[in-house]
Length: 632
Image 1 (spheres, rainbow, N blue to C red):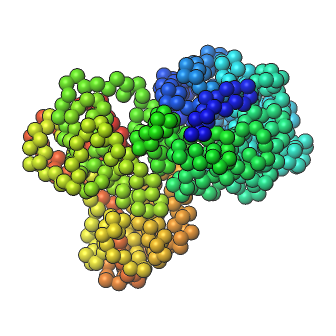
Image 2 (cartoon, helix red, strand yellow):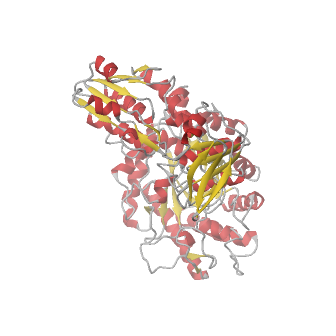
């Protein structure tokens, strides 16, 4: 595979073309020092076979909230710890230098953010930034160069400037945020001057041969911003200034276009890397939604990029490169772009976790997992929680039997996968169907387990992971409706005009699928917001999709009666009838806890996990499944 061919740039010999790009993981201390947790995260990915790593974001000033510290010489020994981890596994690494500009969230509440021009951002603090003076611009350039020198002293092979995502360097690039009339504004060359001068100053301090990379958006996807046409010209100017590689991502944090959710097809923004590559001769790295080595290989084979950045794919499976190289594609835990454990957590300043890999950031806890005395474990339910428990307990050395009432694993995620908003969820069940038998787990499909079947196995441990069932609300005429679960499973006939009662995640999934089939769909939601239970980084893209598909969304609206051809709703004290061929119930679920109650006192160790405890997200179920392996 071309993916595993070496590449040389900036004097660095890199063993393959898989790049782990920089990302805030929130595993560092509040002042930006690496913790053992962070070092272990990096070590697992280095050991897993990546060729190149970019570490970051690394702040060049002390008052920014977030980021690894690179703003003072006192942090050089800490930075060295990170570089050493990668070098131990023959992985080249760069430190990504960051100034947030107008996106700044500060430890100091009285500090005003700075930017090329005093234009407030539509996200984060929304505060109007102070326009930088020329002296302040030169000072920030020095800070970038000083941080680069620290990276060099710490042993990093290169530095990467973050000129993307809407941070300070990209604010200078963009005509939407740079309205200056001096030499740093106006023409495209002037708007690129700030970045060019930073590169020059780094070369002066670190030596002409020290490699400088940059991450840029191939298109800003903001109103009045740079399109791919201008970004190609900017890339050429940056190449002429001396950058040795260009990492191409899509959009800014404020772009009103899906960038990281399942609504972006796999490798969906590789075309931007291809456009930039056509304008420069230095290596170009493609980014965004590359979760599959086959997709990555295709991007390289088609000449769209020279390397590929895979961040969430490596959060999901640190051994992805190794497994791909050995041809074990069926054993890869694929990132499903749900954003539940990564983007949503980062947006709330929480440590990153992962639906498909609950061990991420907890590598030390799960090290050397070995049962002192192997036990017989019976698990009932092959949803994400039950499967994760089966995998981890089998890896620990226990003998595991898993009962699943259908013919496949994955539980409710298989229903979500029927929707255009959730198709990647199908990968979760597929992974477990491939891997569990290899670990010696005996999976009994099409078997509905009752207390008798469980007890007949003489288990030392029983784990109940039977999920939840649709909640049927006490609405007059509810027998005239079908459930969202039955619709997604293909068990219910649905007419051309549909009213979905309930606008949470499941209601949105079923509405999206029916609208995608060309049906006329209305969602009725009692609460003031649709998709209230959907994560912060995904919800707005779901609403956008539903709107584009013509789904009518009624909030603060209660269904009070279901007739054979209409749903009667109450809104602002007024009643009206919504004509429809089919009413679909999606008002939530209730835990299936009967079996757990029946087995109380009959098995020496009895546990329940996932939705049968209380309905939540798949992220919670897989975490509980993994945690069981620490207890049992």
